[in-house]
Length: 115
Image (cartoon, rainbow, N blue to C red; front, side, top):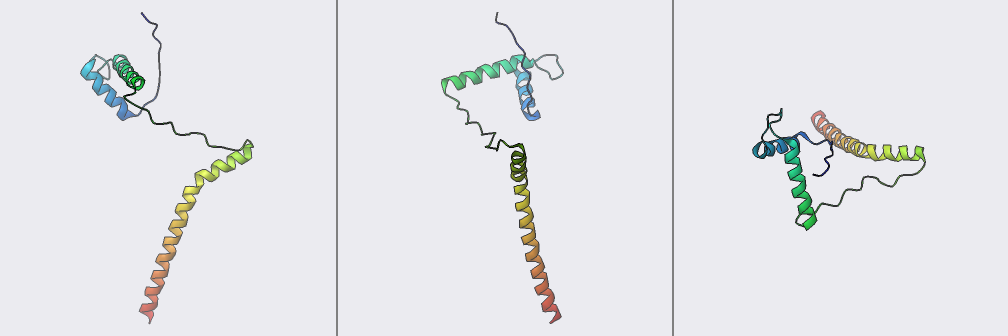
């Protein structure tokens, strides 16, 4: 018999529910979630490792998590802040442009009413 080791990981609630649903169908048990999670997860893992090994399933290339950042801590912090705030600044610029356009339209309409 092979040595058993424990694995702990986080997963989304909808994924866990799908695992439990499948588990209740294949490995029902008197547990709070209604199945033997170890058995169903082992089956899912074995099947997926087999599919990855024989090439019938191909994983997407992982996204590059770390972007090139400066070695200087102050520069890194500035780069991160800039990267995180840029989308907000763009959105604010779009809102300002939209509001300026609306104000110009209202002024034109008010000018027509005054005339």
